[in-house]
Image 1 (tube, rainbow, N blue to C red):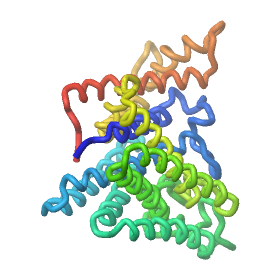
Image 2 (cartoon, one colour):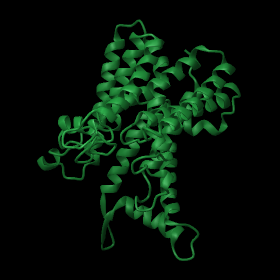
Image 3 (cartoon, helix red, strand yellow):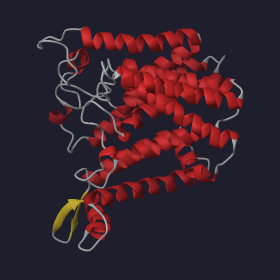
Image 4 (spheres, rainbow, N blue to C red):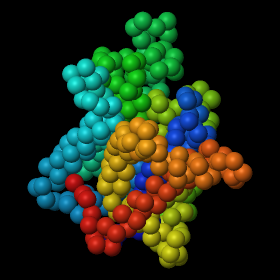
Length: 373
């Protein structure tokens, strides 16, 4: 089956964006749009994870079509989901302040980004393989509306009424009951179990987009996909009035908004790359898109190591990342008489880090070294 370069580039843009927002030079100086919204509302940083789920969903029709009819398909799906979940736990371990001990294991985080991707992939693959498109639309609609109803109507023990806070919503209560202290925060986790339900709808939006691009006439599919994305964003903004856009709770309005934006961006990539062949600018993003797991796992894992790897610089004991940022970016850009703010220096470090991984993944792409599971 012909590979869509637009999908590779869309996924590559997402991975590059995820690295950019995850690895600033310092978290004390970050431009507001590159930080997650504190609670309600959204920033550019909040689009990255749902775009990744949308891209995963868009790739599912292509991936399963290559294996359809083989006995290995169910085993492949289960194996891939299990490995993704395990790699997420490994990342959590890397990000846990050393040393790992019985005390740290008592609060070791179980949910995470790769863990959510694993669960969503498992559900979406089953739906794609076993159900019709009409059923999938019904599931997506039911997930969004049902989650809304459950969150706003279900009483939470210990709270006067269910509200959209970290503690007093049924999703957080479920997570506390299942995970106990094994969450990012004591009372809730942004990658909790119940909020994975609307995340499935986000990925199903990608499935619909992937199916559409795979089956329909070229020019029509681009225009219709873009229009569908615009419609989703309009509905989400209207829904925001009664069910606020909120990434931490992955509210239905947030799921719909981000799926709409993702559909628009994918349509633009398809128009530029697959229809008009304007590819020169896209080469680094193809490398990210062909090796998304390597790009995410290795970059985030390396950043965690650099953040905690303390070295002696003269008489100072400091983290290697902090030293590189201060000496190579902050000192040159923000010192006396320099041009830039601390936020610019922090962004410059993040851009340099993205460029470093673009070189690594570009070389892997040149050698056709792809890390898949």
